[in-house]
Amino acid sequence: MTTSSASKKGLLLVLAAALLLSIGGLCVKMIPWQPLSINAFRSIISVGILLVFAKATHNRCKLTPGVLIGALGVCGATTLYTVSTKLTTAGNAVLLQFTAPMFVILFMWLVFREKPNRLDVGACLLIFGGVLCFFLDSLGSGRFVGDVLAVASGACYSWVFMLNKLPGGNPVWATILGQLMGVGIGLPSLVQETQFDGTSLFYGVLLGVFQLGLAYVCLTTGIQYVKPITASLVTGIEPVLNPILVALVVGEVLTPLALLGGAIVFVSVMVYNMLNLRLEKQRAAVPTQEPDLPSRKE
Image 1 (cartoon, rainbow, N blue to C red):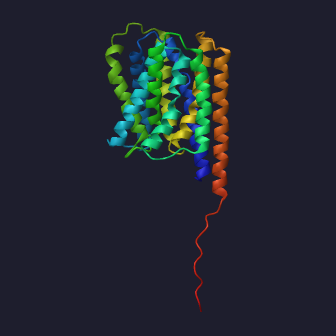
Image 2: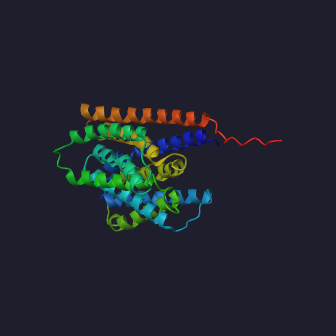
Image 3: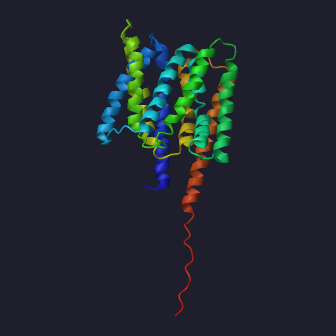
């Protein structure tokens, strides 16, 4: 597989993950449980799917510092997102979590000494502007704690895109262990729930199978072929679709300012990816020059 085709495969997988993740806000809103219970229930299902995936791909677990650090990031991202979605609007939760690209740039610079290029920074600034539109739209809503937890989930979520960069990192097993941590945290709350009606179970299964299980299969595979910052920017589709679904089903109305923010995020991600692919094609087309060897005198 060439570099260009591998990059396209990675982008498509990350995009598929973003589409699956976008149903999270709606499903969480439709389940009348405590947020930790919801996260534990969906994680139990997701872990089963990921274990099957690990076995099918012959991916064996090795406990390394990279896997453990990655697991903490996954646990923080999934748990804090679920709690914040209950404490604030679904749009706020997912969009404030989408500060992840900014955290990716920061951590890649501070931890891995990789400076972002101008295209990365420009895309992040535009996306931040889109996110800011949503955030300004919700100021004074009384959901401060939920908003803070959503930003914290964004910081944790950024490590999901860097799972391959960590020493001894294994994205699949970091995800499995991180979700098992979420099960452990939420299980005491889950066993106390009493409302196990058809609607709750339906949306709980949707979360476990699609929003967490298959989404993370796509995401952990896709990030093997694209840069962390690129992967985190591609998931900008999620914070656009997530509040739209909630608005259509639950009735959380999107204001003109929120629609403007969604348009900025969507267009920025699409333009960024097209420019990135064009640059990769140009680099691949440039032949590698070998150094001139001195001619041998006869």
